[in-house]
Image 1 (cartoon, rainbow, N blue to C red):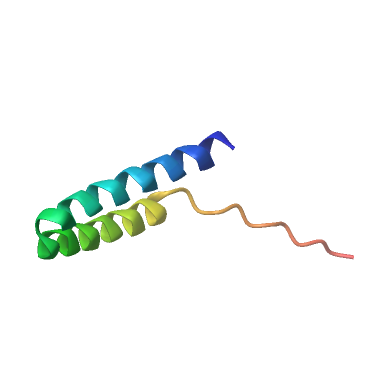
Image 2 (cartoon, rainbow, N blue to C red):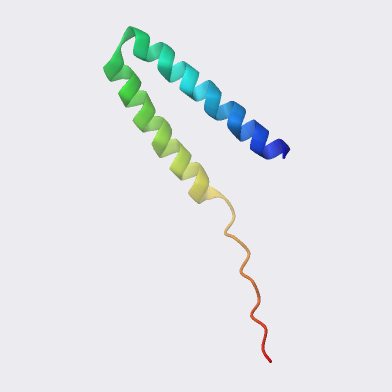
Length: 58
């Protein structure tokens, strides 16, 4: 639960910053949004691999 709340808080912070930048200069907000997307994908791929379930043999 705590991890989900922190992820939500991080997302809201990033969207607020992007919105503030977009109020000043839209192309800069698009570039920062693209960079944030790349960073998010890299963070997701850098985590430990999911634990595979052991198959039951009968």
